[in-house]
Image (cartoon, rainbow, N blue to C red):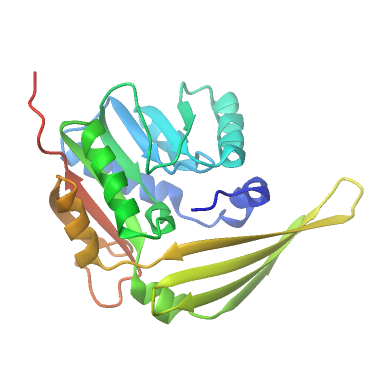
Length: 253
């Protein structure tokens, strides 16, 4: 699972149409429906901290974990500007450690898809269950096999901005359900010259059946799943799915 490097510094530019506020409203409503209106939350795979900041605005005490020091550098710049007391930790989600439990864990923007083996997901989910308060909630999303195979596929995407541009070459391998995307990025420097850099990322598509099995094998209760766009039932053409799970196994003191 490769970490973001140079792309981290232009990530927010190319993600500026991502509906983070809408996602945050969904997360907040789901948390509140489950009785979590305040307290300590973990944003797992927090990236540049956009969602972490939004949840902090909602009144939650936040911890953000990501394995990319470059992404966390951007997140900490946002923290300096906002003043929210967010704790950021550079850790691999498959091996993360906390000082205690949290009321909920959120993991969005297809961070789980960077885990290429089911064993990796199981290890992560077991840690989530371990660090949740009794009856704590885990909310995550993932991109489906359908999205990688039928929507993105073997496509090339290019976008040009005023100060940067990128070429995204996508390749999907149906046999192992691995999606590879090669990024070529051009960033305008202060002397008006452009710096070119490249990165390769890998994600794996999963089915809801697989995710449900892994949630339950990790010791959690599978609560619900829904299409991420409509918030309705999951269907064959769902591209991204939300899953809600609940901790079990601990006793309230």
